[in-house]
Image (cartoon, rainbow, N blue to C red; front, side):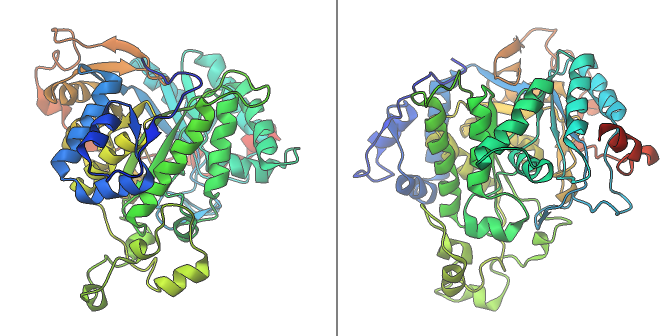
Length: 480
């Protein structure tokens, strides 16, 4: 089964049990019980890395079986780096008058898609900065042009923060934010938009988000945007970026909000809505600090006051499993909040991913973040609840701007999956298997005779040509 059934009935919770109760964890792995937020936080802290991975792997095998683990061939196209938000974790954004600001011409985007199609790619992941210079018609023409030339390519594009800015930029009709989002989304869908990526999720806790995501939409807006996409029958993903100023309880609260809104999408029909979409996958990754304002914040434990016997990481002092604290409450309880970062390690990443597999019982796929963690940590993640190795990533610019990322070809992804004890399979956007690569001479990894030509390399980043270096006045004028 590659989907959750309609009218999904959530498993029962057992709040009277300790999170480390073996019977509870075995029931969670089997899909017969659901963790409470308190239990989720408990197992994150108290289970050994081995046990946490073992139960997450058991849960993954309940959903996906023992044999196949997947990947997708797509391309991440960042169509513009002009952005009116000022997220402190971002090294990608530019102001419109910066010398290296760009908005790609449709012809340049078409060229990238043609390269993807030539290697058997099935989708593009298209996201950009929030660029106020681009009118709605620019997006409509871009989508219709892509679908006209590449009808076989799935367009996975425009994360919730972009949609919230579309509402601000285009001033659509509607009495509520949901209605305004729907007005824009329907038109983009009719022009060729197939699904929404989960970008911009970061951490949902308000006290964290307002410090790292300056100018970016809040959690309710993000979740509402995704719910609108689900009511239009679209499938989406959800993400989380951790390992900065947040507390551990903030990670659990983030997962809990995703689970609650997924319950709603999978639950009984509301009103006269048609067939519903929902979240297909959850992907989390650690913050990459290089070249970012947030990266210049001192590490926790490097100052004398951090080492006092009673010192506790400021993020943990103000993190909550339910609602966020007010700004005044945060300042009163942790004056140093936001002034220290706690970077994530490989083990912290694996613990967080394993927890997400156990906690998100209504999400089909958990993705391994080898792009930030490296190929071999990504491979190990297949034993910690991940069922998907993501994309070959021909190109990526946002995370790459903020730190080291990796680029792998199809043969290496297949080898990583096979060496982890599974059969690699190419999938599409809806997680349907396209091709299973059994252990035969024609499999991508078995065709390789010289692995020195297939080593991991630094991710390609957009280097705009002069004609692409800024918003094309001609393109904007013709789209207006």
